[in-house]
Image (spheres, rainbow, N blue to C red):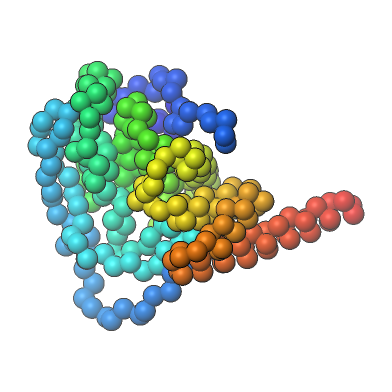
Length: 290
């Protein structure tokens, strides 16, 4: 478990923790068709980023962070696990706010929502050893992953809800995917490492979302129940758990009043599951015949 936070050593965050992201629980590339956008002058990352400010709820210091101007990065498509793909840059890289003074980090939408008890935990368990980091105006994927992992670490030690931690894991997996997809010059070894890390965090996201589904009220990470069931089914498919994936996806397809687009995604995932199961059976037949 500690290995997934190796990047945080440079921030002074100790990996010596016996906590798991999710406590054990005994209960337990869709491409969105879009219209062709009209040709326009291509903006650069520098032109759509700006410096925003918030007050840290832990140390009360002013926190500056880079953010994306509203509406400037246009959605191009959505992958099957709901990862959005944008023009110009990936806005999700800029969704975590980090206080460079005390080490508190969280998604921008959650940054100021911290209870007194959790503030005290950050002050005692993070701030004393936190070294800080000055990030460039345009983040690399490594920068973004480090910021998200700090947010996940803080969420873990403050016992955040499973749904919150699962959502951070999902986004970290997306960033690993974006990292290897955006660099054509990666060595095979480096790409394999990034793919492996993506799979690790997709697995953590799946575990957390399943536990959240059974224990928490909706919405969970901004998702209603049908959307979460769909996502769990797709993550099961990516893990090769086809029988379990089929059960979750089938519930989405028969759900009353659910979004038509979501049902279309579910139908596509169901077909992929069917093809994967057939391929697995054919491979097993070949082995048996030999």
